Length: 77
Image (tube, rainbow, N blue to C red; front, side, top):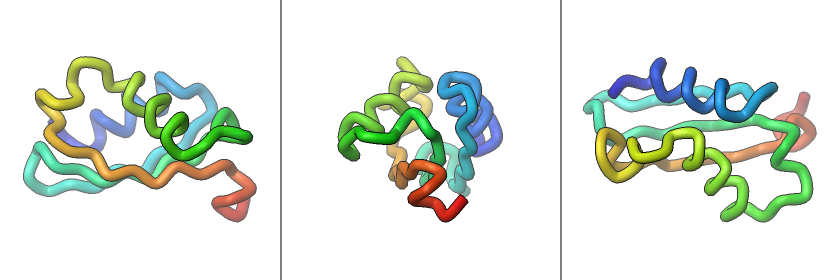
């Protein structure tokens, strides 16, 4: 697994989102995801939305994913 693939999966699964994914070892990643659909949702609900885009890859190909989830307003644009 690589950061670009994860970025693509997240952005396809959350239309209108922007994702920045980092990770050097192929199993541990960090992502910042900006999406209007996060508005009004608590952090756990936002994380579940992102995890849903990755499906069975979580806990398998992706061992760990640290998330920062923001609305465009929270991200400053």
